[in-house]
Image 1 (spheres, helix red, strand yellow):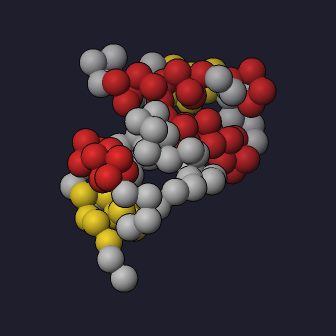
Image 2 (tube, one colour; image 1 turned 30 degrees about the vertical axis):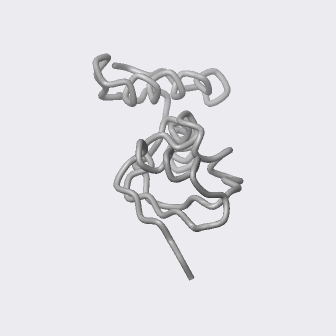
Image 3 (cartoon, rainbow, N blue to C red; image 1 turned 90 degrees about the vertical axis):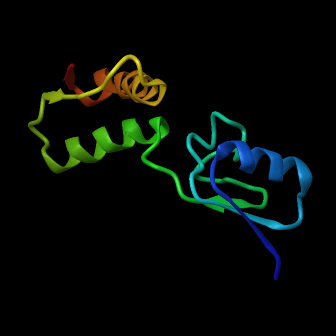
Length: 107
């Protein structure tokens, strides 16, 4: 079985353009959904797999799990920096579920 191993998003994007049949394993997918590498984390589709850090897309899920674990929770402190695009995306995603979860985020 053949496979391409790529070190980061840029190389993975190039490999995706080059083949639809050879498996691509990325060592750092970054934000794989935003970059267009995969359709979604639930259903990635295609021939790409690999490693990624906790993405912005999972920020809301982390808050849901936290609220499930601590039902009386109402305030959550979030550390982030506006200079980091990934951090900013996670902050925005975290704010989407606030009303539904009854949480207040504190920066």
